[in-house]
Every structure is written in C-alpha cells, then in structure tokens.
Length: 618
Image (cartoon, rainbow, N blue to C red; front, side, top):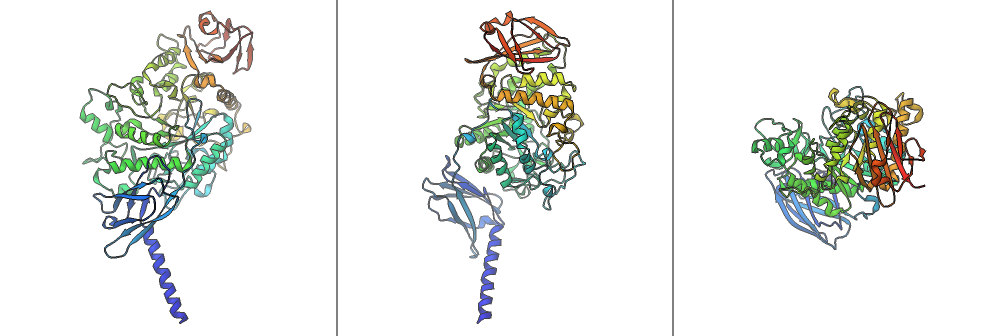
C-alpha cells in the first residue's frame, strides 16, 4: 500500500513538473503589466510551437479578452486584452486549449502601478547629463564578465571586445558622478546583445526585455535607477526602435515576412536621412534609406507592421514603469518610419505627461534638424511629438570655432550664427548640446589637447541655451580619434577595474592637468546646478568683434555676462556697447577665477579664455 501511494505521488509530481516545464516553453511578452494605466489596452505576444492551434481562455475579473490575432507563423499569437477599471493586482491563468486535450497554462501577473511623483520628472534644461557606456566605465562584478549563454567572452585587450564594465560598477561610483555636479545619467543600451563579436556597444539588441547578463540583471537595473534617484540623479534610457540583432529570437523565427524589411540580397541604408523631408526626393532613395539595413547583423524593423509597433511601444512603457525612468534617448530617430515614431512618442506621453525624450537626429543642417523636434513649423504638417533633438550643428560649430582664426563666419562667429538661426527650432532651449559623445572624437582631442580651448568650450556649453551633455572621461581629459576606431573613443575609465594601476576617480590618481580640468568642470557644473538664470533665463548675444564674443543670460532676478576671448593674446575692451544689458550694474563676480570685479566698465581677459561674471550693483 505504501509503495502504491509512493508510485502515485511520484506520478503526480512528474505530471506537475512536466506540465510546468511545458508551460515554461511558452514565451509571453511583456512578462507582466500594471493596472491603472491610462491606456487600458494590452497586447501580449505569445510564442510557442504551433501555439496558433490553441484556443485562448482567460477568466479574471476586470480582464476582457478582446481578440486573439493569428499571423503567418503558427508559432505566434497576439492577444488583445482590455484592463477594466475594476481590475485588481494579482495573478491569473492564460489557458491554451488544445484539441488533443493537453492544455497549457501560463500564469500572468498584473501589478500595482507606481505612483508617478516628482522623482520621475523628465529631464530638461535645468539638467546636465552624464553619458556612460556601461561596458567601459567600471567593473563592479568580475564574475559576470563572461557568461555561458553569451557568444562573446570578455577580452579587455581587444579595443572592440567586451571589457567587463557593468551596472554594479556604475552604482559603485554614483557618488563620484553626483559630486561632479551633473544631474542625470544616460547609459547606452544595457539590454542583451548576443553577438559573437563587437557586442559591447549595446545597439544590436537580441532581447528587448532582458538586461545583458554580462552587465547585470533587470533587478540590477532597477537598483541602479533607485540609487540614482537617492542622489537626485535622473535616469535616461537609450531606446533602439529602428533595428535589432539578427540573433534575436523573433528574427530567427519571424512572426511574418513583413516583420522586417527584406531584399533579394543584403541592402545597406544610404544613410541619407534628409530624404524623409526632401520635397524632391525619389522613391528609390527613400526606400533605400528607410528600409536598408545599418549592417548585416542589424535587421531593419518594419514599423508598418502594427503588431511590431505595438510591441515596441509597450516595451518602452514597460521599462519606464518597471524602473521609474525620467527620460528616453531615441537612437537613430530619422531612420524609422516617421509617422510611427510619432505614434510611439505620443503613446509614451499619454502615460507620462511630464516625461522627456531626446531624438538622435545626426544631421548637419539646422533646418533639417529642427524638422524632427516636437511642434516644428513643418510645411508638411509632420509633428514628431519628441521635445528634444540632438544639436549636431552646434557640436560642429564648437569643434571648429576654438581652433580657427577669427573671420566673418569663422571662429566665434560660428557660435553666433548657430544661435542666430534658433528661430527655426520650435524650442531651442530643449536641444541637447554636447562637446562630444560615444560616436565622435573626444573633446580634448578636438581641442588639440589645449586646456585653454577645453575650458572655453565647456564654458560655452554650460552657459548657452539647451541641455548640456558630458561624455564620461571628459572631466579627466580622455582622448581618442573617431577615425582610429570606436574602441579608442570608448576606452575604459581608469580605476574602474580592480587591477587598474591608475585610479582617476580620486585626485591622487589624476595628473596635475587632469585635476585642473576636473576641478574646473566640477566648479562650473555645481555652480550651474544652482543657477536658474543659466538653466532657463533668456539669452542675448552680441556680434563677435576682434575675437571677443559676449552674451548674457538673464531673468527678472539676475544677469550673468559671459565673455570668450579666442585671441592668442590678452585683450581689454570697453563695455559701453553692452549698456542695454549692463546699465544697471557696476560690479561683478567672476566664477571661474572666483574673483571680484570692482569696475565692469572696462574688462581685461586673458588669451584663449572665458569669463563668467555674475553682475551686481554697488
């Protein structure tokens, strides 16, 4: 009798285990959702062998099964649900009923929505963003440098290999980042990139819902965001809509042939994004730009497919809600079908009205860049719904201005002319401005390794209009030329690895000139953090003369005068020309040198330098 009972028990356990394992083979994305979302609709992607042969049944109060969508591939179902106002947090069964009676069950969870508070307010021009490439900043957990399920293993000797940086490493140095004076952190993509080589950069995602195990776990990412918020640091996530890696599971088994753009043979994009707004563009050029692939391993996603578009919208919202994000940086904004990107952005703001998104519009002409900003005055009526754009025209001007002799349109005039065209932008104050980034030659390199030009450039970036962004390592004068290879502009931060002989996170680990640069930037960043007049004040500029460029930031309470001297010698000048702004002031405090100016009627400024003067009365 005892043996019989034991046999029955073993049989029941076996059935339950097999049932559980079989159910685990069914992939459902998103893996969970929330009650109380502004949009009550939810579409589940379900993937399993011949899952389309099943009937779907859900019995949970407040959940309406609206429609079960079948596509070309029988391994997929797209289930439309509606979450009613009376739905409660909890777990429920999704049953897949088969003709042979061997039904499958997936347990699905609805969570209670987080309270959206000031902690999750979007980034704006009161912020300065710090850009980090996770693999190259700090290795906080050497045990995850390689992973048995990941194709590429760690090789720090390879400039284009994986070096082991991770989320824990960034968390370990959040006090360093916060004390520097920045107010937001932007990580390049941290999701899984399961490529055999060149996977560290993160832009070839192979699982949209999973943190790359060599960088950490989803829980680690949530912890990272929470630790940032404890330090009043906002968090910006890098989102890639245009493409994904060819190793992604839904690329290897496409739901339908129109899930991606396909050609008879490999076709690369022509990268000519202006064709999206060119009134004379050919269909041939549009097709190649929009539908061509970035590279052979980056499948170009087709947002005309409504299931894919819904999938990507929900994925972005899932990360925002899961982690409590403050913003999104959208990769390659003009490379995707623009109407669908606008729908994606609109869907996000319907859930998070105080959020912000910056689109990467890598374009050199101001009019074409301005087209991609929300509420632009476009002839064709297009509205991207994306409030911020990357200001590449400004970056180009900065890269040249401080290295040139003065001319009618050269030197300081480049900065003047960029700002003079701000009438083309719907909201230039929301432009993302930057001296460099992860795709460009390092700023100190561009400034010909001249600390004077470095200080002038950063003084301008941090006092002009827009949202400044600082690339990790700029504060310690890291160098690298883009044409030498991206691995060299994305070098490891010294001191981020346990065996590093130099630790630039501390003063003793930096050279004299590195500490000079660090202290200069830290002083300027922490000053800006408290200066509403610099963040949101009005801007008035004067035409540069004799290599001297003067502009002002002002509001009802305060006026700041910025002077840039691009000459190779000291200059003195009378300030009567600026009386319309300074007539009520007689003195000033210069924040770089931390010195008083008892008479601002005549100002002397050193060669190749900047002055930032807080004006006040007698």
